[in-house]
Image 1 (spheres, helix red, strand yellow):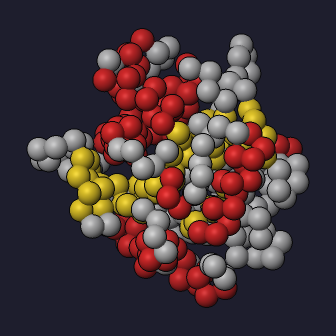
Image 2 (image 1 turned 45 degrees about the vertical axis):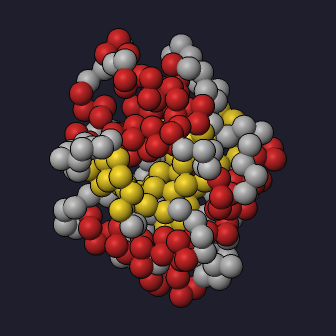
Length: 264
């Protein structure tokens, strides 16, 4: 259970040492991520570094992982090594990994995690479900537990863009699947699943029947880029969208968002 969000939930930002993505995660550190670090949160930018002698290492605001820093290393630096780290330390119970063009409102994020825990208990796999349409977004403050799809039902997974929250329970499944290469037995497995970390994570979650918890407070779209069919997403900084705590596709305007928000 999450007793204190700040003390139990670590935050990772998917990054790489290549322009323009370096600008993206630096923008996060200059705004919401920097604010959270100052407030005592553990926030790290996840970077691939294949020459490491260790599996991973913390270096100031970076979390370096022994994997490539190109597309082939995305799953490893975003899901596998963070999961391994989560299991090998005692303080944190969950990790939330998001994209470098996503804005996180610290206080709303904290409040949403506490609210979801009160409703659902254990939070093993949480975020913005995709694919999703306007019909799935029933009201501003809604969330729902989504059972794993069965039969001909459309496969859904949590958006890596807005970010996924996983527990140690889920992390243990990830580590075992990779360590023992069990994924090679997955139907239709392709190497490019390592590019699409959220899709691959969803397949692991599906295999172990871990329920997905969708929350409208995590938005996988924005006014910059609208990926939800028929939905006009609220902006994180607007009064109308005051419930939104995590929003994808906000690169380039994070400093302006900071000016409009009260983060405490």
